[in-house]
Image 1: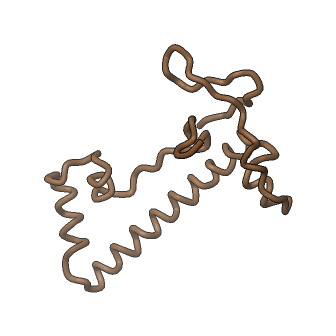
Image 2: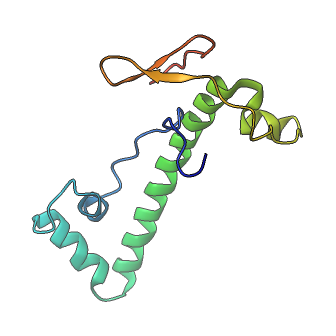
Length: 126
């Protein structure tokens, strides 16, 4: 099979709260929104000390959010893939599992949501 896997990555998490420009890029806020306009003025304005401080502050905020989410991604990935988990293999200095080894089967139920089938392990979501 080529292309995308037939299921969504079970450890995918939602990342939000990056700021008005990010929200506008993702379609959550309109580009005409006053908060977006103000953030754009700050970003595209003069490159002085307040501007650099704003960028450093935003960068620190984003790094903190991503580090928190990465912990969740690692936990869910370990739970779902078990000994075939990337993190498990990394920690135990193992070669990666063969690409022919498939993850537990997932299938759609009548609601269109992915459900566990026989052999799939439950994953605790936050």
